[in-house]
Structure formats: structure tokens, C-alpha cells
Image (cartoon, rainbow, N blue to C red; front, side, top):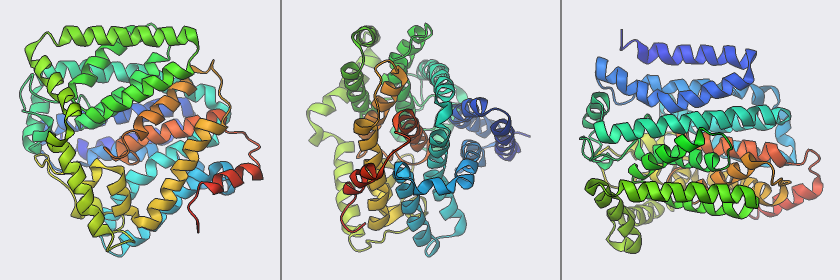
Length: 446
């Protein structure tokens, strides 16, 4: 019976997603968020009971449920011709190019798995933007999802670090995930109910930035717990992202809201100082912080630099890229492999999957989205969520070189933030002048 859940769970999730999408879009959004929060956890429970499988179909649940939102794109595809939707048009064009190249080199299944990773986050973002007249409703459900989701991820993450449940321990052993730490309590990098420390840190980072801008009393419980789990992930890329995100928040918020953020930061710092009184935490945190002062001695940093050099040399001989499916077919790394893989860098993932032409078009759309969100939308200091969402985008963009932020679990949060930020402030009467400004951001010849 447990092994059957690997197929039954995604099927039920997909069916329920369709039902909720038809009956209540807000409940559908919350449902999708929680699938991303808990599906990897359920996968480990099933693997513990039924035996480990390297690629579990159970993880398709969040992708299939999110893909239901693609109905909006299918029924409103003509919207892509509007100047305001240039970020979506460019991203879809880049993915299409990579898909065509991928079909010439890899099996259909491998290509379609990669396409899901790239496409699903964009479908969800398009849905949020296309229904921007319901922005307030969607804002509220996303806020609640992050509020309780961050509390859930943080609480389980702290428990995981100190007590390491058997299913998590066994999964680490089966995966040979040495980059996750030693599969013993007090010796792991926290990944909570997600599937990797970096992913967990990214979700907690986004959640913390949104929590800092919320007024709910629950944040007083959620933020400290989430921050402790965030530190226990030992994910330096997200640490850097959080710093830049908080800086943006403090600059953009009103004085009253700024005081709240500063108070939250001080609370988290005090919590960190208390936590580091435990020798094991003190050593872990101090070791990771010291790597910032001398990156040349940091193995991870050197692997990233060397990995990018090797990859660029190879890609110069294949400017069209290798196409969708190449990353997981030819360049996957094992859990115990410390070397860099394309999933560790947005640059490498884009170039391998989309090639130089597809990457240029896709990233041009991202640049246009960033320019529109930061400089063209109408900013209201009273809309704390909109400010927090922009902080989330900045925090993720700071990890562009350090993580693959546009696909899969990362991409879901990034594109959700982009979709909501554009929905909040993109002028509905975006004119030819705006289109001209957007085109000026594109490389010559596109």
C-alpha cells in the first residue's frame, strides 16, 4: 500500500487541484503552496515504509497541481502580445527553443521532465498576473500560506536538527547526501520538509521577509523559529539574500513599519547569540561565517569558479546548448559529490538547457520584469506585501550565480513573486512608450 501512494498521491493532488481551481481559486492557491511545502516530506515517509527510489513519482504532485493554472494561459494566450507581458513571452520563447533542441538529443520523458521544471512556475505566475483584479484576495492567501508554512518549516527544521527522525536519517543514507552533513542529530544541515538545505533556506528566507512586513501576532512565534532553522541550513547564498532583502525592506518601508523590522532583526540576532552558546552550533555558524572572509580556501567557492570555467569552455563549442533534459541526463551530481552541477547555478542551468539564444531571450524577459517591478510600477508604502515581495525578488536575484533560481521549487517562489509584483503595479494602459523602454533592454538584434 505505501508504494501505491507514489502514484495515488500525485493523481489525487492533480484531481483535487482541478476541483479547487474551478470552485475556489484562493483555496487552490493555498493548496498548491502546501503541496510544495510538504510533498518531499511525504516522499521520505513513503520511502521509509516502502523502500527508497531515486526518482519518486510522488514529487510530481506539486508540479501537476501547479500546472492546472496553465488553463489561464491557454484560454488567454492572446494576452502575450501585450507589452506588459513581455517577461512571460520572452521566458516562454526561451523555453520553447530549449525544448526543440532537447527533442533532437534526449528521450521525450527526460525532455518533458525538464520542461515541467521550467514551465510550471511561469504558468502559475501568469495566472496570478492575468487575474490581477483579484490581487487582494490572492495576496491574503499567499501571506497566510507563508505565515503558517514558514512556521511549519521552521518548527520541523529545528526538531529535525536536534532529533533527526528515522525517515530523514534513512533518506540521507540512501541518497548518500554528504553535502547535507552527517546523518546524525546535531550534525546535519537542516532541510526540514523540503528536499535540500538550499531549498529549505530559500523558502525560509522568502517567508522571513514576508513575515517582517506582516502584522499578524503569529509572526512573533514563526519568525524566531524560522530564523533558527534558517541558520541551521548553513546555506550561505540565502544568508546573503536575506541581508539584501532586509536592506531593501528597511529602505522602502515607512518609519513605523521600519521599527517593526528592526525589532524583528534584533530579536533574531539575540536568538542567534543564545543558540550559539551550544558548542555544536557555535562551531557550525562560525565556520560558515569564516568562509566569507577567505573564500579562496572555501571548497564550495572554488568548485563553483572551476565548474563555471569548465562549463563555459564546453558551451562555447555548443552555442545552441544541449537542450531540455541535458542537465539531469548528462550533468547530474550525486548527493555525495561536492563538485558543482548545473542545478547549482542559474547561468549554467540556462546555458545548458536553453543555449545562448534561448538564455538571452529568457533573461531579457527577467531583466524587463525586474526593471518594471523596481522602476515602473506604482509603489504604495501602505502595501507592505508588495514591498516584501520585491524584497523577495531581490533576495533571490542575489543568488543568481549561486543557485538555479528559475526552475523547480526555487522557480515557483521566484515566479510567484514576479507575478504578484507585476499584478500589483503594472499600469493596465501600458503604452507604446513603455514597450519602447522594454525593447531598449533587449540585446541588439532581438
